[in-house]
Length: 205
Image (cartoon, rainbow, N blue to C red; front, top):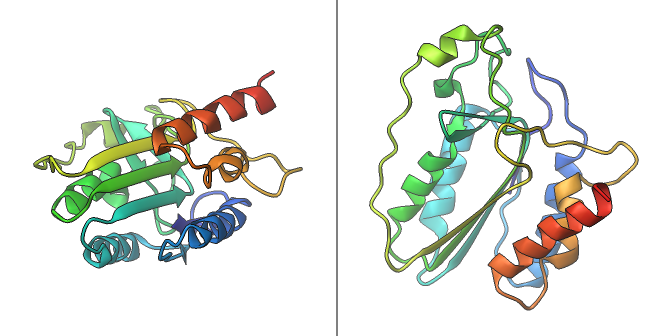
């Protein structure tokens, strides 16, 4: 579980800390071994994901959650470390791509299921503010699918949209719904469907 909220060049977020603490409590009750990390630089994010992949035991179920700033560009999703440069100068190379996480995890042939939840904005960078990122070469994170491992990925919002915090609530919008269903005795895909339906019911109706 990674929560980035104290950024050097971007606005501070107020819910990721509470979010990962709450998710950690639920996962521990489900007998998961939980590693919770906060405010990681890019190097630290790489090291944390590498450690996560190395620690996964045989036939395990892996659960990866990231809460923080992020964006989407060229159909790739990028998690922003706390040392990410400002909005006019950051590059894809300054951030951690979800495909890099998948690439690293798929090298673990012992993994049975990997769940990835990205609780972040998926809005594309402003071309007028940061034109150079559109000239950058897209990272190549090709990987060989592991036929023995199922991959489930969920996002807190849709492509090209923002994820929001409600100042009047203890948790972020996505985790406020996730915490109600994560321990349910149903397949993870059904659980995440309930999470999405819960968000629609609570926040959009």
